[in-house]
Image 1: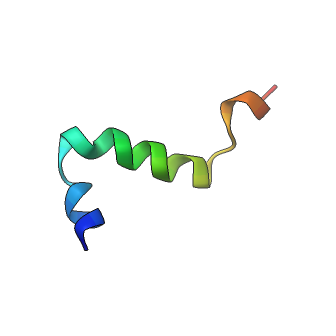
Image 2: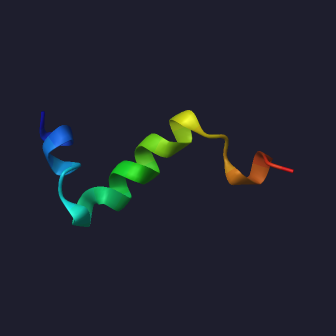
Length: 32
């Protein structure tokens, strides 16, 4: 559960976003 705990810390937010966002959104270089 460390991942969920880490996601609560602002200093780790970037890591969570970078890891999670690509799974739900297409990579920027594929958009027209």
